[in-house]
Amino acid sequence: MSPSVRTRPEASGRALSEAYDTALLDLDGVVYAGGSAIAHAVESLERAREGGMRLAYVTNNALRTPDAVAGHLTELGIPTEAGEVITSAQAVARLISEQVPEGARVLVIGGEGLRVALRERGLVPVESADDDPAAVVQGFGGPDLPWGRFAEASYAVARGVPWFASNTDLTIPSGRGIAPGNGAAVEVVRIATGAEPQVAGKPLPPMHRETILRTGAERPLVVGDRLDTDIEGAFNGGVDSLLVLTGVTDGAQLLAAPPQHRPTYVDADLRGMLTGQPEVTADGDGFRCGGWTATADGAVGEDEGGRERGRLRLDGDGEVLDGLRALCAAAWTSAGEGSCGLDAGKALARLGL
Ligand SMILES: [Mg+2]
Image 1 (cartoon, rainbow, N blue to C red):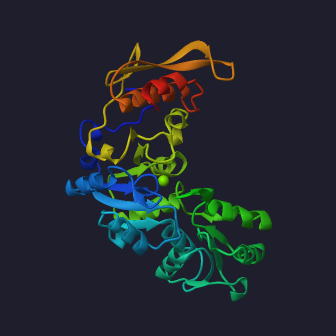
Image 2: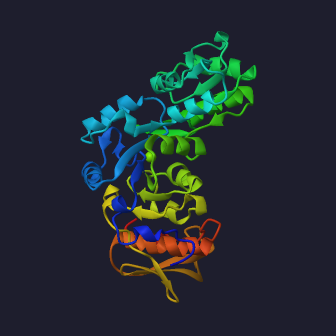
Image 3: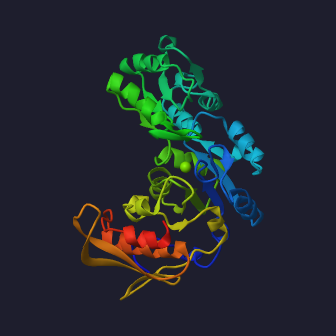
């Protein structure tokens, strides 16, 4: 086993749903996309739960309340209680409550999820910079958030009122394309004030702490589709992770991942929770998984721009995901603490990725 491919012996050969006690699942790109369930999600989650694994849903989106998210999941065929949903609104509300007096007023730029989370911590949501707030908080407000709300936040932040953000995801996927996310809204206030908010959401520790406090997970497995939120959040929390390829990450991005973006496991979709994840073994010939052998080839070739560049090679045959696992081991070992710059185009094309 290569030292740069993270594995845990307790999971070798066993289904992940048995090796870990709680799945901390991202939603968009993992469980659903554009409001509909992702293929194999409903039945995979049902089987994982039947096998004794606890399921919790962890979202950076602060717009909806846990009740509303649980209702949506239940409608999709995944029976869920509000207590099984953890949002960045809850994480930022706890962070604020640790820094302001009990019952303090908080200027809210965002949606109902944020207001409910603040009340849960005994804080009082207010709407104007003139309401003497002890803190300002920004969370995703959806398409109907008026522009004037950013002015309200800016007036208070410019006076020195502490500023918080539920998360800083710059974009948010919608059924019609990619829309500006809360991170873009935070930039608006940053440009107007020059100030810097405290942020709670993935990949930062307040969100991970909120998740562990609410689930009591002892052997958690983070399941996500984004390297810079889900997987980096797991890395920062010292927790194992499963990347699924049903969302925003493709094979090339995965191979180029720096250490904090490298998942413990990778699979096509949530069926990966129900199986043992195969080991990658290293020998003098390269990195083997299933019928594949991957090598970091120092022999130079040319990339699309005609520049000379080393290559990742893939030989053999077998399951697509085994080929990707072998390539990850070769790429990450070759890159060490950096990001793999080898050309993986041909190797990924062999896998249809
Ligand atoms: Mg996602």
